[in-house]
Image (cartoon, rainbow, N blue to C red; front, side, top):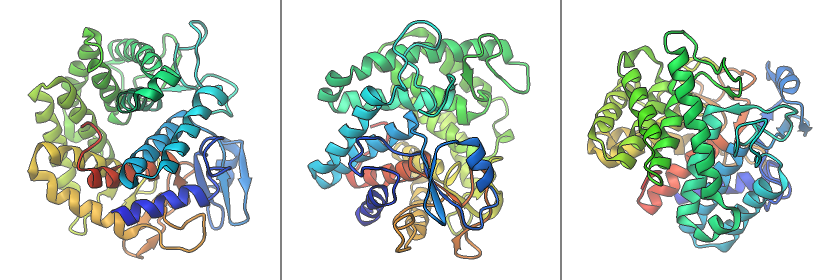
Length: 395
């Protein structure tokens, strides 16, 4: 696990996603493979900042969530390897976020206060339920573990302001759109995302459960409880990607509130994940933004989150430990062995178990041709680092 973690850190530093590689100008969203990628032109049209490198490009937008996820990875690496250089990179990324990026909205008017714009290339305010949830959670987690960073950036202050905004928007959308097929912020049009899916809603649960652990606000619990009841109306209606997000959200609710009903919900969705797992350890690709198939390992929307979810759940119930280890071993096995710096040590977006190689098709946000810094590589490496440290995301 330490070897795989080290290889992935080397990918962050050598692939071109951090220029310079010490993180002072943040982390790009992803590497995009240009060769034989049917979605590359749509990527370029949708994401208007990239650096071409022949057969691949660096999709340059600096996203707050990807940068927080990578900074947290480097702090974990500092704990694993006891090497100060990793701490320095994490601080450089955080300096970029708070001082240089312009992504944090510090005012009270126009946009949700304390929100982080989707990326530095946007000319409008694009605030997503899922991305902001990671910003809440990771600010609070880093602030708790590294008080000197909290003091430097006022991380808890900004996180709790954002938690209030996130909670108010989530309750408003849930209550006003509950009977509709697609919940959206139609009233204020400030928040984006399909809150009825765990991809968004369960991450809000995670963020608000973590915020409740800091300040016991009833509104936080109200959303957590109501969303849990919604998910349990018909849990099997979701795909396996959504099951995995639901496990993460319910584990957070259980960990931070202590209410056993959330552990029961986590087990429901954990069993649904296990029901999808193949003998080789794969969780089939079913997410609508990526190619689908039982033989495909989706590391953008599915296997990565199943890995974290099963790690969390196995710490509360040993029943899930074997499945977690099987998936973890598969993930380590498929880590890219290529010598090229844009690939070496990464996890690309999709692996084809039949071909025993990266592949399976491309979409403009999902598929093998997208190699994400956050959402794929950072969270996968979190799991490996936390195994070495003998803890999990919520302990």
